[in-house]
Amino acid sequence: MPEYVMEDLRPYRVINVRFRNEEDVKEFARVMAQHITPKQRAIWFPAMEHRRASHLRYVQGEPEQ
Image (cartoon, rainbow, N blue to C red; front, side, top):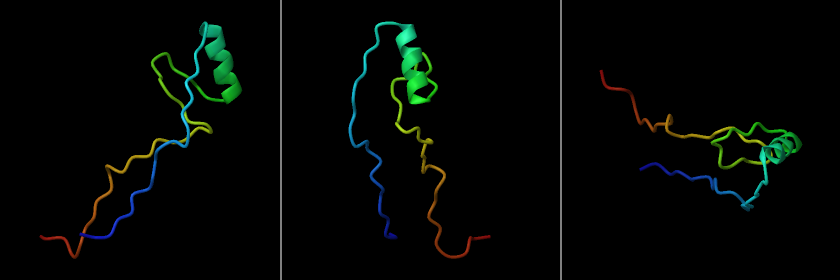
């Protein structure tokens, strides 16, 4: 197997934030400069693109024909 170093993608710290109403959620989203959907359960600060590795493959040598 080839050598592979997995990057640690875990957050440094997680903080739960609770809101009294929808207006508070909207104000929080404005201050954080991020869009928050009704079903969203977490955000990164600063905002981070989704990182997926499912499209990566290891290929050795020439492909068979």
